Image 1 (cartoon, helix red, strand yellow):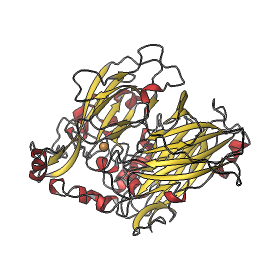
Image 2 (cartoon, protein in one colour):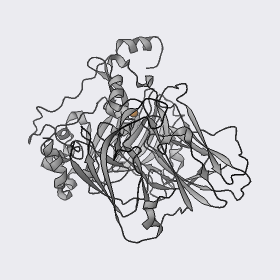
Image 3 (tube, rainbow, N blue to C red):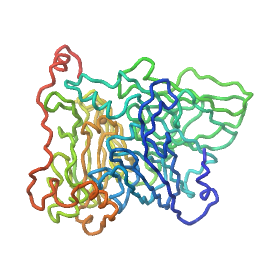
Image 4 (cartoon, rainbow, N blue to C red):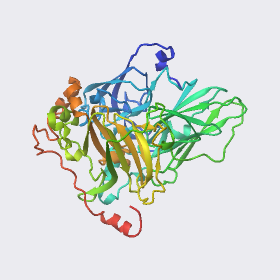
Length: 553
Ligand SMILES: [Cu+2]
């Protein structure tokens, strides 16, 4: 699928353009054509799905937003570095203030990277309710030219809103579940079962872009009797890697190159399989299989394959195309990915037992207005779990998931090398896998899947001054506090960053402070700052009883 709006790209125009999108963010009550009750979703210009955004490397994307909701909103361009424009990264109370109801705000986003990205809401998990769409940045000098492109953007659609599902999840004792309102799958904005045919012509080369806009499950893509060559992962070009199937965690993107067969004697099937990795199997919901036709000739018979391949994504077996070697880590951070219970047995998600809460001052303003104190993590409030990185230092993160939950971990403003995996309970080292320390360029990406009971080690160079979120991309987990902040190069921020008045204005109209520490003070005084949520030592009685009965909780 190549879209009309990419016309200047097809004509090979040389100049960088300004791509303008005018988005009125509105409530849209819809069931998305699914066999389930309608709910109040969040769309653009009274429509769901949102328009797909296409541009070319070097372009400026201007997103003119009007907030017609009765609550704050914001947009985040997922995977876009925002070099020098941290204030357009779109996380409320981190990169600035949310967009107030009834007001307008313009994001000006420099597209310095080509590849496959997406734009989604970052206020109150509004992407769960539909505020999400692919962002494709083309490069006419792409080293992997293809004759044609196809896109598969896959999302889950729940008959309840994010607010309703978080209310259920926060019932005391962990006894509420949104799964009593099971979701369904949308492929390119349509009901999954309407899977449209892919038309292949003999000898042609196709680039297939996969975008996971899922709030919860993983999914897989495969084409019978065709090899897929992975060439892009989260916007980063890779050495070609032949696979039979690609597994996608929430927020991840992958491009594959597929060579069409020379013959039109047979048609084939492609498969999108929604897995139950992040959830319990729900009969009729997860796992779910969607089969589409790969059509060479309308008259040809379809070759049906009995076994559809299924395997984990091999982050450690794929190399980045840029030949960057394994980074040497200046500092290592252990990040325990667990849940806990706050007062009253209320479920809460945590990193190192800290459940994130916003400060009273957006972190970007704390970094810019507190002088020398900006290098001290406490300036941003203990409840934000902030780490301050020196400009250009290499940080190693050990994502450690000792529980029965898996987490797709996403870092803003950077890509990280994925360098080691293993099981958290493995004392022998038999499960440990690590990339070679030389002669190998580890895969870089911005969102990595951390499986249940496993750990994943990543490294990144903190080369992008700004405030960057590191969070789980399961909307519910983020909504329950699974988030932390990196302040990269606070000195460099103070020297170079000038926040546009339009950003400051949004804070002013919502009476949000724009200077001082987490509590708005110009000293080391934090009185009035939000409390660090207190986590109970004991499991709530119902879960403790389950654990005593031998269940893993
Ligand atoms: Cu999570």
